[in-house]
Length: 277
Ligand code: C2E
Ligand code: MG
Ligand code: MG
Ligand code: MG
Image (tube, rainbow, N blue to C red; front, side, top):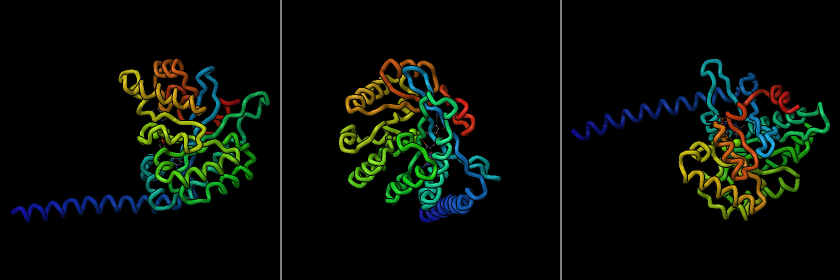
């Protein structure tokens, strides 16, 4: 009896698994030609300085509009791209497109500070080894000043291979590019890593910001990250600011920069240029 149930059970899970695998394979196939078909595009979310409320930069975020699947969430397709290796083709294209867009920003008024562009770099791109070369190429081709490019790496990607990451980040630094740790605080890496890995900034994960007004622990962690980062000369960005109260509290605690729906949704390159000019 148990054997029969077990068998049915197995078949059920097996079918569900097959479907999941099938969906993944299909998505991978679809993603393969997505760039050429013009289904992939970038949007740009404003990053604001808390001391004066000025727009100082933007984060490039990839969007996939599929004719049948509709808008596919980056949390889904970036993972597919990462697992399949497609990210090594898509990543450099994203970098080039983002640099090209940023190179055109804010030139109407020479006295204005030119906004930076922040680009997400996946663990696989970090491991692939040719990142510094790709970055140099993009900067050369687009004419973007290296100091205006920020690369966002996840805490876990950097820590899983600290020696390799350190060397890579040093190379990028020598080229003048800035490096930020994304989703900071979620990786349990401990703050000690920040001494060994050369980073310019940390982006506090939005899960901390979401609860900081209700949960004293999240507020305490956020405050500690700000203080610690500043003592190491590292800039702090708060992610996912959705309420004015969060912004006020972050400003009070000395947080440098912020992004989130309260400050601005991701918009097209053209719209961001109008905001920055
Ligand atoms: P991330 O780098 O942490 O990006 C921030 C995410 O938070 C974005 O989601 C953004 O739209 C969302 N967000 C911004 N403000 C708010 C807010 O106030 N509230 C809430 N609830 N969410 C907010 P998105 O665009 O869906 O991207 C998700 C993740 O996908 C990114 O997380 C990043 O890890 C990855 N991703 C996106 N574009 C790229 C890319 O071009 N390359 C790579 N490698 N990864 C990317
Ligand atoms: Mg990011
Ligand atoms: Mg993040
Ligand atoms: Mg995140």
